[in-house]
Length: 548
Ligand SMILES: *[C@@H]1O[C@H](CO)[C@@H](O)[C@H](O)[C@H]1NC(C)=O
Ligand SMILES: *[C@@H]1O[C@H](CO)[C@@H](O)[C@H](O)[C@H]1NC(C)=O
Image 1 (cartoon, rainbow, N blue to C red):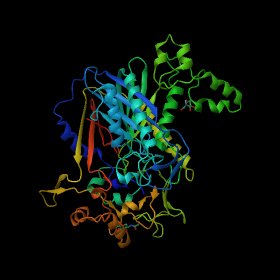
Image 2 (cartoon, protein in one colour):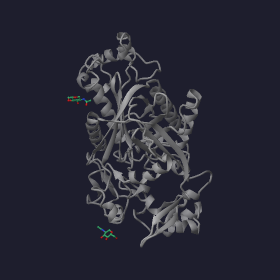
Image 3 (cartoon, protein in one colour):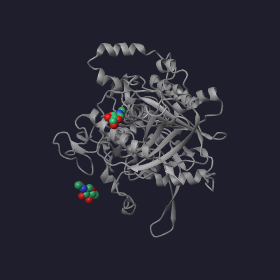
Image 4 (tube, rainbow, N blue to C red):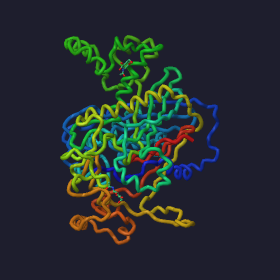
């Protein structure tokens, strides 16, 4: 099963967030003056790998997917943008399946103790890259911790500690600088994994878009007034499911890989230029830089390793040990490491398995409407570009995002200027009123209802099919599972009618024992930096940034 399949068929969210932007901002000429173009900017990065063995992984909701090692480590990456005498906003990107309200509450508690009211739930946004290969058990709602058999303290602590530390770093790195924005198209990095469901959208809406997924990448480039570029954050929609539901190694999947590629690229190919004292051939700063040429010189490698001193628990973004001691006369030694984050957006039904979905028994494409093979849902799997090697698929999809990000980074010339601002509110999504245009003129007001999972949810997706005989697009359900469901909670008639035509498998929004199974009240947050607006929904993903 796959936790984000509920956004099936919806790909263009940017348009719908205007509702919130208008509602929460009441914009009226708040664009500010174009003169104050310099902000204070600070970036940070910290390890959040967490327990790498014996913990259920978050994403596929597969209770048999238990971590047993590390493909590569996970990080939290942060930027802070502040007006010198005004507001500040913080954005944290996690190499995790999603953020968590519980984690955020704990982080804010710690930031309050350290900085007073500088960083609050209102101006700190936390987002996840949606990797399906990170440890689970850190969310507070029952649905999300069923397969991890409850709360996992170690997962939770690794996230809270890492986020706190990377915000501290970003705070300490705050210096005058500018932010640039750039956007571009990236193809062949995500496909719609429910193309038949997408066709249920009205033709008039589909005609507005060339593709059935959002192909835009938006990138922010952070430039320190003295040191030049210090980092970049970009947003692009593709699922973190290059690694499969049977993978047992902790991994940042394609976005975590892309971030590493870009940070390595910058350190190797940019930081050596200009006045920087970091000469790549003299002081290799990452194992990936030294291994290829040192493979046959093992002893030399050991000697080299011995020349590096432990940072003694201090932050790794500042150059310590060798460079600090040798170059202590140079302020450049304080230059923080380049931080590059690949953030998630409206990836609801966007799969990185771009070759399409095939049956594992026959090798033929799966049934178009139901993603089944001969009526069976368990055999239909999406294939990544490195098929059958999922590590290679992860690398290729990461590489495509990395290359696009470098293009956008090198070409970023539109500078952000104007106010830094933010809004935060809680909305009860179980009883929202929505005004819809009626066929034949006029409007009607409809109401949302508490959350519920349909039978189609249990079918999972072609990135990770569910067990048993559930089918995608099922609007009838089946008597046996209805009976099982009723043991947990029988949905009311009102709820059944409201959720129609979706048949209810689990009435999660109305299940409260031993505590809430699913959230009804969701935080909605908007960050604004000049003409850029980011909408963030903690626990889920972000909308693509909008440029006003
Ligand atoms: C740095 O540039 C060189 C030459 O273009 C390239 O071969 C190398 O892969 C680059 N390094 C990284 C880490 O991308
Ligand atoms: C999928 O379903 C639609 C609507 O029911 C139908 O018109 C179409 O023929 C089906 N396509 C395939 C390939 O089965």
